[in-house]
Length: 138
Image 1 (cartoon, rainbow, N blue to C red):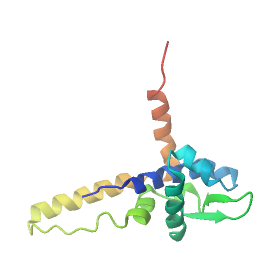
Image 2 (cartoon, rainbow, N blue to C red):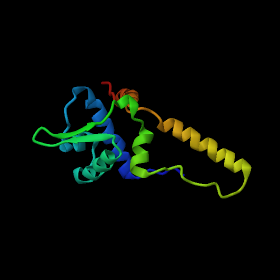
Image 3 (tube, one colour):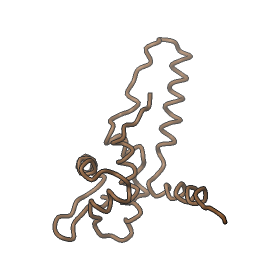
Image 4 (cartoon, rainbow, N blue to C red):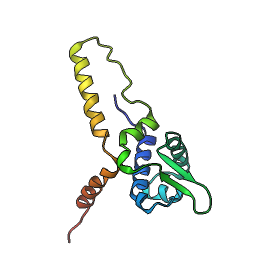
């Protein structure tokens, strides 16, 4: 039902990089975004163009140019990003004509949408968890 492409995963990772740089209020070069998000640069260009069309990012031209979020990270959700890149991942119809299954899939969709409604600014909690998991003690 909800399967995300590598493009969608890279888009979220890249947007998180931009969210972390948001307070600096300066454009981030595509090379830096690619490096920090572990995204191939040529693929990232395509992704950023799509995010720009959805008005989630803006680009700044010139030597000091790059990309920035077009709005505060607290107003962009992971779902917004995936909707832009993947389209409506929940655009499916329960073809069983079974009311039990229809209710189950509706609840499932709602649960997944709720999880994907996390704001970019709140992903820092996962970063903190990851740092704790990756700590090694000697």
